[in-house]
Image (cartoon, one colour):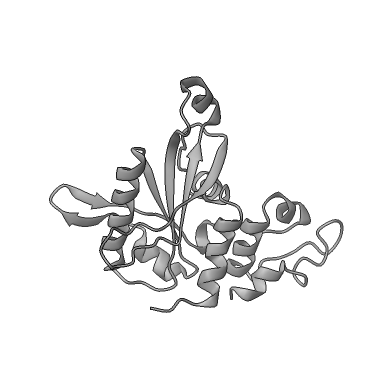
Length: 198
């Protein structure tokens, strides 16, 4: 199945700056994260030796390097974040997500969060619930739709998190922008990628 340019642009935001995934979970969705001081991109290939491709859009590992030094291990992943961008609603997708999360937890032996980014609010609303996958087996993605993205109104907002600004501009194209001062003209001069993902 082919993916759109907008999908790939959104995925690239997480590949360019893995710390963007925990930022969205914490700031936009209120998820409590473990202590960590580094976010690194992990292998997103979640397939097995069988000839079926299983690849998440992105997988980000939250590391506590101070803990690594204390216990003299090469790595200690505190949490993994499986990032999926959804540009449409496909209920069967949750079975694939369950596999991604299960394989990630099995490999890393740590908690796993599923961050689902939906550019369309209707899709976000449909994914933002518990999915019953069997007796005692449920999956609840952390869904980020336009309603949970803050409007970016100043140059300071853009400087603080350019990736968040890209998503916010795409989600809120008609949001008011400053007309005077440091943020003047933000409505006209969007970051280049924000034009690519409409």
